[in-house]
Amino acid sequence: MKKAIAPAPPTPVGGPAERLALIHSVLAAEAKAGGHPPPALIAISKTFEADSIRPLIAAGQRLFGENRVQEAQAKWPALLAETPGIELHLVGQLQSNKAADAVQLFHAIHSVDRPSLVKALAKAVAAAGRQPMLFVQVNIGDEPQKGGVATADLPGLLALARSEGLRIEGLMAVPPADRDPAPFFALLAKLARDHGLSGLSMGMSGDYDIAARLGATHVRVGSALFGIR
Ligand SMILES: *Cc1c(COP(=O)(O)O)cnc(C)c1O
Image (cartoon, rainbow, N blue to C red; front, side, top):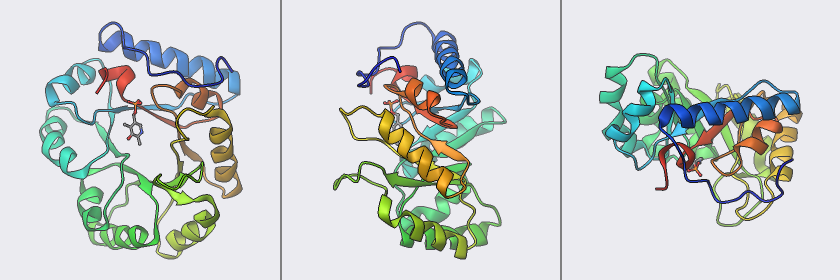
């Protein structure tokens, strides 16, 4: 591991194509070192307007992530109409009353974290006749203020999702700030393995390299691509 504590995200250099190339080369090298395939790179475009997003699309990026349903609804329909093949991922907290909207707009939802949301999503999926890729968000450091299901409650939530007919792809987490993320990524990977889940959504601008080394299948990178919010 190159570093114990993830530093502040670096100020991105170069244009979108250079930024993407740099991140992809790091992801490939770290994943290979860890014995894993390289993860998918989700560009987190929250707070950035369409004009900041288009250059990344022009550079070939197709996976994008937002953290608010309303913001995504305002911004993305036009961009999706311009370019076929874009996948939109929701990475922020989802209110149950927005579950139907989220199922309509997003290709994946990374923030399934409580029984009421599982039930709302099951209803929305049945109505829509399609299911986005779903990740259960785990409060991997069991921090009181943090989103995600407590690690102790994960088995129950996965069982509920199964009984409601939802397919869960994997687990997502944001490790505690200012701590070495590696043990938390390793724990998330172990939990996913224990539950037979193949997806691992972990790693952001400051620690995507460590996440890739530890088997992330999806990294969520915002400021290293778009600049500081
Ligand atoms: C904003 C956000 C990211 C991206 O964060 P950066 O540090 O800008 O890369 C990733 N995951 C979630 C859940 C986020 O809210």
